[in-house]
Length: 139
Image (cartoon, rainbow, N blue to C red):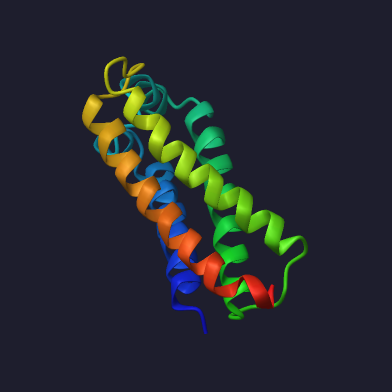
């Protein structure tokens, strides 16, 4: 078993669960995790927009988790697994790097949000990359 891909799947699953927490607990969680004051206010006002946006993120992260678990051999083989894992890894790494550029112009979020979320995304991307490299021949 590829422990890096299992870790990658677990990390994406945890991120998905935290986003579900934002939907359930609302504005307090949106603020705590740095989603921006606008998302928090929309949540407080009962708008469906934060739920829809966050649900989309939950869906994507859950799918990414399934692909990592599939590549690790924990669950059934999913289609286009090599391509999917390459793209997932690239998105995590690109988001991690790009976020540092938003620290000086945070667009409604704090510089700390961009810093910490970038570090987290880079870490997730590196874990995916190592796992993908180790599993490549058997995918």
